Image (cartoon, rainbow, N blue to C red):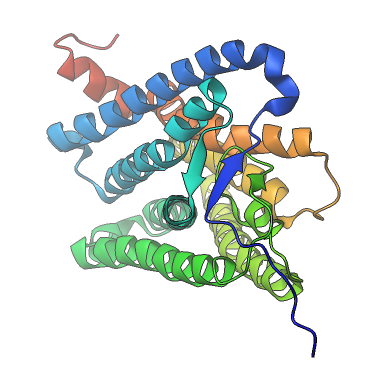
Length: 309
């Protein structure tokens, strides 16, 4: 049997935003500003929740963990992206690429399931308020947090192992970070099995949590509509509005990025989607929860030493 001659590579180079070469300085300034806002916003939420005893509830525990996860998520992706905007030919080693992919997958999936846990918390609070304290106890909260992180770790180990067992003949990644599909495209061999595995995992970790959140909100809305007073209905809707906003944007971006047919969008459109879920979405968490959530705003004002009007 004839042996194939594969020229294997040991490092990669991101093509990044090469199609927008003349706008790279503008992109750098905008992305850096959004990065600083994201870090500041998420760190503020974690700090406020940890310091204010009024927010020591399951809902805000999950929000704090989500903000911490989003903070690390941005640290994994954006600094390297900013480096690439300044030095487009800066290589990334094989091991560093695998590490970036591992943390990206772990944290992205962790965020998906944290949002699901927050949806379950809202369901119990509104549909079964008398048993809320008994159901959402410390043990249940720990199990939900542990489950979210564990699923992310298992999927990340599976995906990274499958991708980096492939032989690679090309070194230019058509992206600005080590995402699964752009790296797989550099392989010397057919990657159909890997693509099927990626699709199956994407369906499981996106559609299942999204379906559970959808079911939770159908039951929540049904319960809210049964509340007699208009004021009671408004208050119940207000407690869910922030979470529902983040859920729609988060799962919407994830679905477009990983569940669409792979040839449907151009590279520029793919990168726009990627920028949305790596740069914009992590910023939405602190923005939505500080602007729309009265309890967080009140806690922030107490921390600043002045009463919220």
